[in-house]
Image 1 (tube, one colour):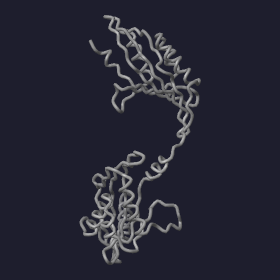
Image 2 (cartoon, one colour; image 1 turned 180 degrees about the horizontal axis):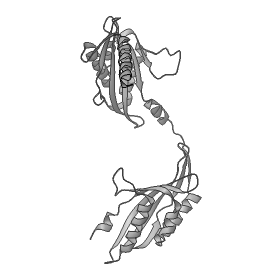
Image 3 (cartoon, rainbow, N blue to C red; image 1 turned 90 degrees about the vertical axis):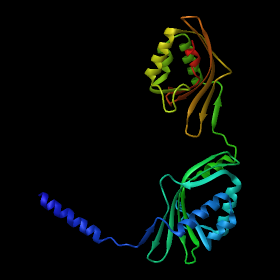
Image 4 (cartoon, helix red, strand yellow; image 1 turned 60 degrees about the horizontal axis):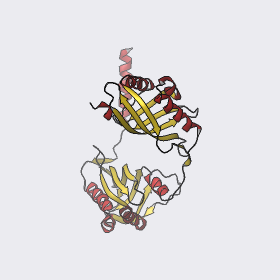
Length: 308
């Protein structure tokens, strides 16, 4: 059986290779690559005349992700307007090869030369402050006069975010009184009175906890946070936890998030020597649709409590 299997595999390989057919050559180095990368850097610099020198008169650019069946593309004149506008609208622009990727020049048997590039674009939109960081994949075709007559580009639609940022718009409702605010108050009051079980009963079993003393990717589970608070009570007395200002409940339209943010004056006294510590605290609590807290982010640090 093994013998027959080997024969079948060999026959399959022969069939596969017999069906291959070369249609051109791929180059790692080529004058067309040099031309494309020079044109790209001229684009980044906003040098309209230099970009124009690389483009054919009948040049067209197309989005490779458009859903328009009759898309007529962008002609040379409008493309050069893009070059100028991008220079005027964005700052700190850079375009580099993306990681270990490098461009290819493909010379087909019909004589057409294509260059494909993988780049990474960075910049900041001047008007909105939106940060631009995205990969770009472009294809360029050269005509018989060694001018670029076609560009096909694939990129993330960061332009949509920029367009949306031009106009003020609402994103939900802010409440200064709400049942979720009441829950946060009750939770903090329970912890102030060392009622650990009640204080953590407002959280889901898979709730996550973050604070400024943690690493960027660190978090505590409900059990870890509860145990940590219990251990703290062995060495410290909570004198008071007082609200500063008033909490807000934000019910977002975008994403449907439900968040209470609150500010507190946290005062504790060390049992061993009576040392008193006062810590400013900001908390955000995410709620699920059942009214339970799924995440707490604490903008505070307990380093003062570690001092001798």
